[in-house]
Amino acid sequence: MSGMSTAPAAEALLAWARAVLERERSALAGLEQRLDHRFVAAVELCHKCSGHVVVSGVGKAGLVGRKISATLSSLGTPSHFLHPAEAFHGDLGAVRADDVALVLSFSGNTDEVVRLLPALRQRGVAQIAITGNAHSLLARQADVVLDIGRVEEAERFGLAPTTSTTLMLALGDALAVVLARLAGFQAEDFARNHPGGTLGRRLANVEHVMRPLDQCRCAPAEMTVREVMVHVSRPGRRTGAILITDTQGRLAGLFTDSDLARLLEQRQDSALDRPIREVMTLSPVTVPAGTRLGDAIGILAARRISELPVVDGNGYPLGLIDITDVLDLAVAGEEQESPNEPSSSEQITLPFDPLARRESA
Image (cartoon, one colour):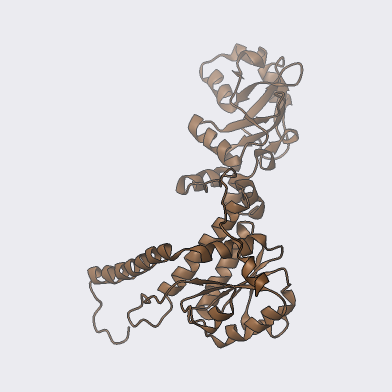
């Protein structure tokens, strides 16, 4: 910005930004209308692939390709990125005949990309092109061409890849999401692929996060309150609740630190030497094993409670979800919604077999 003597007004800055977003939004709408049988053919090639979807490209298209590859893998389609230059220095060894190549180049004539195509063909790898030039060298050699059209870049000189890379990325997202739905990819699968992330933890089952029974305070219903408070303890940071069990060991109630405080505030000292079953919370809110952690957190928030016992199908306690253990997820859940679970009952019918073109060639 060295040529600017004064900073433009805020209104001008916002107008420039809105113009960029409007141009890209308009281009995305146009891309939506361009989707046709070629996209279906690309989906079919990837869906039938028994190997990996190998994504390749250079420059900004290569960066977009890396993200597309990551999204494919995240949503259940095995994928890895292959840099065209590195391919000729040993990385071609990662490519197999049962792979499908997804190659990105807006011009379709990028030297590094064009040089890679014969090597992929020699290995029997089917090729899908994402390009803005349907008559390019890339397009002529690909089995399926996803043509994003001759778009205008959003940058004012029309030089920097902006609109074109947005369209490539959106098209890659569409391909990854459709493949996931076609394969019946479920929220549980997402959790297995993201065990360390916030979303993955929210989709995990409660038994993977709860405090197991041997780390919880438990007591039989016939013990007195005083006996429970003196003798029932566990090493480490304690929970704010005690699981109360009946003579068969099933969960009968819950006694919390708040319950004890209430007895003391109301000067009911005599209750301390009565069976804890007389002052416990009967039939507390519980969740069965197999409940998603995100759903359990929703119950904690809706009921305004701090502890949630986890039980098996016969009512025996397995552990406890304590709000202090999942507070970070509870806060994150207020900031963003969990992803919609794909419908496994929804079927996609493909009108033809795109592999027929290759077999007859």
